[in-house]
Image 1: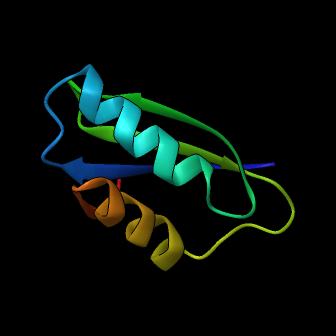
Image 2: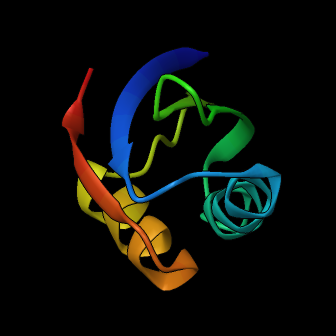
Length: 71
């Protein structure tokens, strides 16, 4: 298992967190997520077939937000 934290721009509420969580958890290889709206972070846990940062960024964009980079 690998855990990585990302900065996400645009999240302001629980609805934002739910949208990001839903999209990122749908990415192959993601086993868990945690969103902190106050800190504007997304923590992603992946299995042995970890997706590339680009796949995580695409899921965040699909949710309507911007992945700024790794925290």
